[in-house]
Amino acid sequence: MSNDAAETSGKNANHRIVSVRIYWAATFGVGMAALVWMAASFWWLSSFDYWWSTLAVTAAAGGMIYGLIIPLIRRNQLPGTNDFYTRIAESLLTFDAVALMVLDRSGRIVELNESTSELLGYKKEELLGRMFLPYVDPAHRRQIVDNFRQTLRGKVKEMTVSTIHSRGHFFDIHVKTAPVLNNGRIIGTVIISTDLSDRKRNLERIRYMAYYDDMTGLPNRRSFMMQLNECLSGAKASGKRLAILYLDVDRFKLINASFGRDFGDMLLMQMAERLNRGLPEPDLAARMEGDEFAILYTDAGTEDELLCKAKAVLHLIEEPFELQGVPLHVTVSIGIATNNLDDDDASVLLRKADMALARVKDSGKNNCFIYSEEWDNSSLARLTLQHELKRAVQRKEFILYYQPQYHLVTGEIVGVEALIRWEHPERGIVGPGQFIPLAEESGLIVQIGDWVLEEACRQNKAWQAAGLPPIPVSVNLSIRQFLQQNLTERVAEILDRTGLEAQYLDLEITETMTMDVTHASSCLLELTKLGVHISIDDFGTGYSSFHYLKNLPIGRLKIDRSFVSDIEHDPGDAAIVAAIIAMAHSLQLQVIAEGVETEVQMKFLQKHLCDEMQGFLWSPPVTGYEITEMLHTMSFK
Image 1 (spheres, helix red, strand yellow):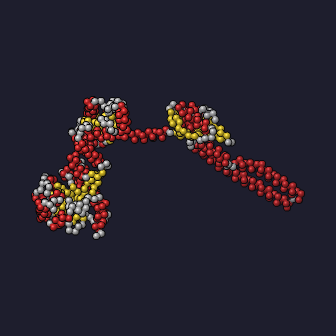
Image 2 (spheres, rainbow, N blue to C red):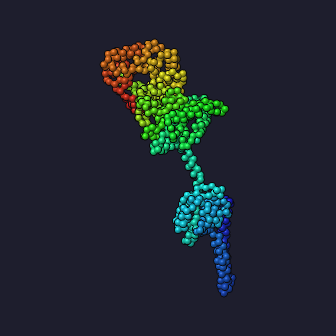
Image 3 (cartoon, one colour):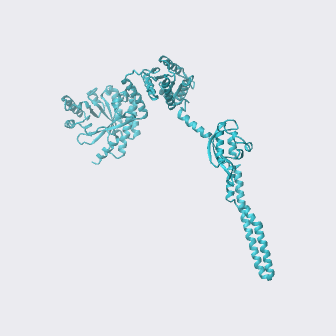
């Protein structure tokens, strides 16, 4: 309809332009004809006849021009300013650019366009002549009547009102009202409306995504924490005891690895349904993240009652899940915490439940523990650290420092050792001695070690790409890494991924790792075939045997700092250091001493022809950027 109207309007405008041009041409023709007649009659007629004929022709031409042609021109001219505004109003009503409605002073609908009729769900004929107010939600009628009154006084107003659709449902529209003027007098109101339904649906969708888990439909962590805080505030006022159960699916990674992530997602959806099934209000089940869920009990009851609730959840999950026709038996571990202390907020309570969950995991899984305030501080700190360490691995909170290794004769940097630090979000930089033992115990050391190896290789390649002198980087291997069957393949993959040549990587192992001579021999031979160098770290503190020094492909011995630190005061340590240097050289091995902190220690090592040293005397462990500056300075010497 709008396209036809636009086409018709365009054709009419073109027709008027052509008509006006024709009429102007006719005017010009009549005028010229009159002039020609006057000129010709001047020669052919007498003076008396000439003046009478001239007068008659002029009168006839003037009458034709002013009486016929000029009115036709005026009728077909394009609209002037006043008509232009009229055309704008006609366009708004015709082309449905906005939902437009005109009311008279009594509030009766006198004009509207198709957009308005479609918005309200009526035909145009059904709305014309009717009062507008009955189509407004009764709760908003007084407000819109006040707006209409102010509009009739000359003000422009806007508001959001709920209107009634022809099908009976309510929906929100944003209305803007303005006075309609006729010769300076306000004769009615024009209403411009915008449907807010889509916007409202989008806002609801955004809110849902912010507070609910998209896959399971359960509240997410943010929503759970908000409701937990509200319940804690109510519990403090009423003296009620509430509890949270923090659940983790046992061996969920194995399920994902065995059946695929889609299978795992279906399991989580069914588990969410079971946890939420029969849970009375205002108790709440939520998906926290991954395979972790939480349940909030607003009335925990006694400790025995709480344990009964937790065991009921365990039994509920133990029922086999049916996934694509395959029965699957799953267990969960549950940590429980209650608001025993007045200063327990949502985050503290959740952390306690998480620590209780960690203790269940350490104790064999498929069980439930209630957090006890009597747990000693060291045990609590250990559980907290273990939990935070797992998070640190997921969030990659680690950084590498590098300690330069110097040639004892030239003083030049001949290598660096990569040393890990934990960039804890609250405690700051945490040294390896505080978390590496726990990482080894929990098995996280393999993931951490792989990250260290790749990051060290990446950084070394970056130094070389910047045009700095190429040097090897030393990386410590943990015993768990060393015992992996695919260690050589992992090292080769990392070298290939980072682009670092194998000759610039030095792997440090401890003497204890060589006790299994068969595995150590095959593993080290494979690594050296890649071109990687092997060093023995902390030499002299473990399983020392001349056999492995002679038969294993080892290139360097690293004298432990415990011997170096007492060179000045203990003749025995001085003799051991001197003997290690002499023995290593006789076996064609390089020697590096670590922990060198004084000039006396350095001079002793130089006297006995030690090859290299590292320690605080010349440089502590520093950042990669500082190593860049050191290598840059060295390259210009």
